[in-house]
View 1 (tube, rainbow, N blue to C red):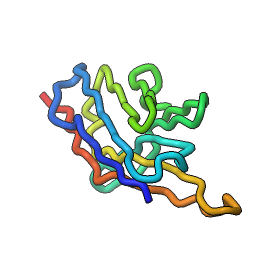
View 2 (cartoon, one colour; view 1 turned 90 degrees about the vertical axis):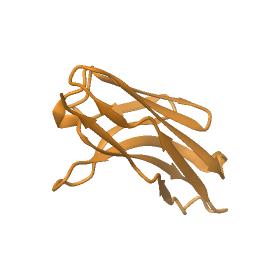
View 3 (cartoon, rainbow, N blue to C red; view 1 turned 180 degrees about the vertical axis):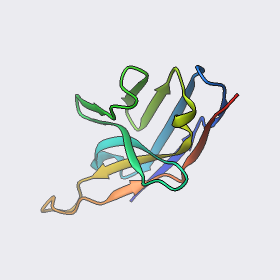
View 4 (cartoon, rainbow, N blue to C red; view 1 turned 180 degrees about the horizontal axis):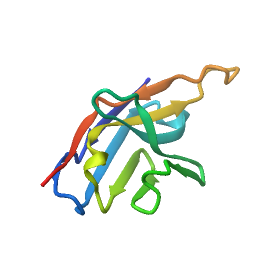
Length: 119
C-alpha cells in the first residue's frame, strides 16, 4: 500500500512558475515509476511527465518548460513559463511491483491539486 500527498498547487499569472511536490509513504520500496498527470474540465487525463530510474518522459506540450525530479520518496514538478492551457487538476502517480512473482503491479494516485493560470 502506497499513499501519496501532494502540495504546491494554486493560482499563478501567465509566465509564472509553480513547484508541485508529492510525498509517498507506505511500501515505498515497491515503487519503480513516479509521475504527474493532469485533467482539465471536459478533457481526458493526460501524462505530463514521469521518471523511472534514469529515464524521464515529458508530454510534448510541456517540454522545455517543466522539469520532473525525484529524491527518495518525493517527486517534484517544477513548472515554468506557465500558460492558461496548463490549467488543470494535477495528480501524482506511483507505479509499483509487488508479490513474490512480481506480476502484481498496482498503481496509486494522489488526491489531485488545482493549478490555475490566469491574469
